[in-house]
Length: 108
Image 1 (cartoon, helix red, strand yellow):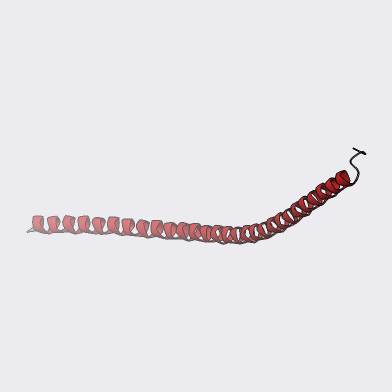
Image 2 (spheres, rainbow, N blue to C red):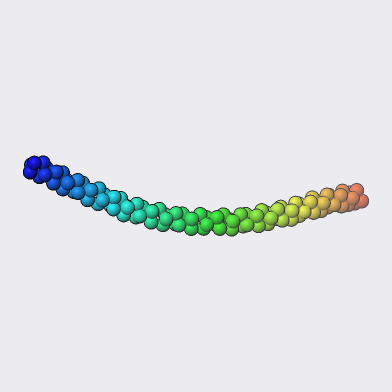
């Protein structure tokens, strides 16, 4: 009977030791979880800031692109208008030259 009590005492000690080991593992897991959660939160915040920053840059670039496209269309319109004026002037000058040649054939 003494042996049974001694054996039961050793089993109880072993069970206590197991319980303490599992408690330590549990607490270490909680610490790891909290660290991981903090790291994840920090990474999420950093990514959120980057996304916001990139969205702002994208918006700014979109506005710049729109402005550049309008400016490009303005310059294209001015170029086409100038080209038409030049063609008109060349046609007028060609006509005037033809008239001058008809009126003064001996001059040329």
